[in-house]
Image (tube, rainbow, N blue to C red; front, side, top):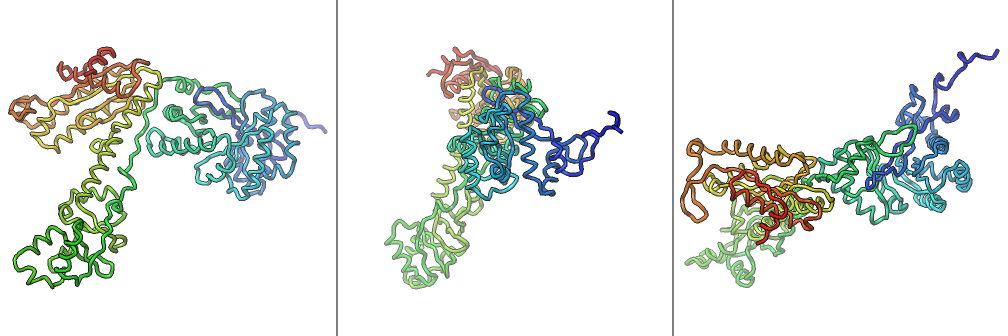
Length: 605
């Protein structure tokens, strides 16, 4: 008896017991997720992603592929996924690239089972041009036979098929594979895009990857884009393509364009505010840079012998006393010569061991000590290094000497260099990042506002209360401005001292400036004592050394609206903003706004 339609079994009603059943019945369903050109906003192509029967244990890809590995049908599943994707794509008539996932093993085995010419002929018969296909090499397994993989990629390229590396940077990917295959696309693991606006180290990683891509002639695809801020930042970094839910979800049908919100971001002239890399200043600078390789002396060396050595070697700042490779004392030149010149010293102690008056607990620094630890030496209570110098060791064994002059100079230079990138007091971006951000704003072709903030009557406050309280007031400026800026749109930099620069993309920038001034002026009063508050200021010396009354410290901001095409160089913008700041200080107003022509005229000296 023929079953009725109501009782006839269907694929939806079947209970799928194995992945092999799914492969044999051809029930896997492809979905297509757009890959978008971040430069133009156009859809570059779609990645085919497979789904198992809804409601089954194999519905989601992770469960499906894990079960296939347990059954030993992993490669068969990959080939079936490609077959199902091609079948579906051929009936859709969609343009752009079709990105198909295959592991290296599956690719090599597929070409071993069947000639590539036959595969290409079948593809063409389905109405799919080989040049529209990109094979994504997944990293489900380690590549063992590099030669076979390179040969397979070469065969594909001869027929116009493109190559991509998938999930690069997930811990299993190989730079060697990238170098040998020279793929057209490299898809970067979603880890590097997640929360990118808050991680300067990830930003630097992207910059490094872009340099590698340029070397190998590849384009990068950012995977896992979920927010507008991630999308804008990767666009501004120069990453070519993106993929993720902020651009479009996997769907049974391909799409013609990304989501509306993504289109707006990509078309916008607003630029991302790049996060600064939080790093130890002058990474790689160690005590090895200060090493003076000088031969030590033995503990039984006499004072007369030390004196003769110092007379002969006039450049010696000091000499170390070493016993069995371990430094036990340090003889500073100036102190030794002064003692040796005393009456009767030569007669009484000339032939006695040099350790008698040597410093038996010299400052010792390990060869690989970093700049931050060396800085702590400068601020320690033990300041003998300034006159005596110090001993440099490696693993506790003597390597050489260092001088206090060298140490002070090296740390000072390191701090100056670090401050160009990030101010050591507020940890805000310094002059170089400020200039870089202005350059990006000028290149974007959008209007923006350059605001210059400065304190009124700060020097008398700093002189009266001391640098510690002065530093606290400068940190207060930074906190207040940060609290009133949109971190996604507005850039805050610390030029130095009490000078700050804000580069606004927020449309309500003028109201923000006024709130910054009002909030700071109120909170700054907390840093004065009661007597100063009652008097409305303090008595302190002015710049000419004369005592006079100074009002309580306040903040002023000068701002200039920068229109596209008006300025070519960052320094021109900075000069115009500085002119607006001078106007704010001289006029006594909290916020002064100059138009570009007025600011440009006043910035010329």
